[in-house]
Image (cartoon, rainbow, N blue to C red):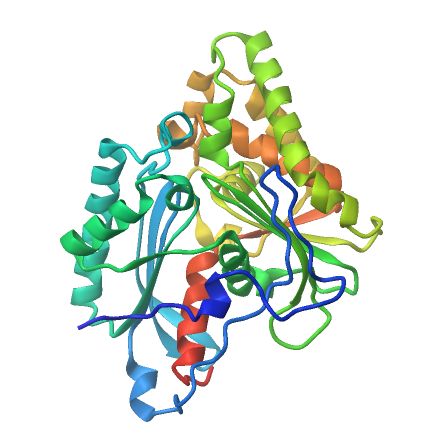
Length: 372
């Protein structure tokens, strides 16, 4: 039987008991800023020889994708023994209706049923499954969560944007370029984008200094600015409006960021950055080994963004590593990425094909007393 781990209140609710400059409240436009604190470690858990043999699982049900990782601990982290990813577009039409559609629910439950089967076949004993922005926004989010549990046995937690940001940092921070300068880590999702300013000059996970969650991801931003894909002028105008929307949402954090220096660092985790990195390398098909940990000049990412935003949909669909499933969403991702480079003009961009799921796995193993 799979034990479904739920985070302690400290990890999913508002940060409490913190004072000083690190605590900031978001203002109105969807931005949120606060000091992030890690969840308290569970008491009474001590290392046990059998725990090293356990299989742990993490499910991330986002606004666009459903992803699963199953892993076992190893001396230097963990070894992935199974994985699954499917585009489900859970947030499709959410901006207009305020609800998760019946079709999206069916797609998500179909994908989660595959995940549940893998959990059983891999004899997973401890799992954590999270849902993010689509379920946070939807009026029927809680109803959907209950149905998922009835039909698949998977207990999804609707986590806060704060917890989403913390998990993303925990999962990918190891890929930050070495250096002494301040670093910004970002996660472009389907329904939101998290920007996290970190102090990485410490042992272990970096200290989170400030953060913002903008209500724009590749799905929500695409649906906010419909345009005629065949009309070059309309495409260009829509891209400009997307950039403006995102810039407004990032503005509260932008005003608080330290002055740009030559040694600032930038790391991104999302389908947008991995896709653009694949185009940078001119890969014929996606290759995680070539992408995860890649460092790309920011000028190249801007150039690719400009090219994609000016292309007709039919041309984007023909590009390797984009295809029909991502072709309509990648333009919004480019707009978000360029807006991030506007406020944090690092010369290079680190690319991570890892994030929330890896952060969940590390948290589960740590709280289970596994030595890594």
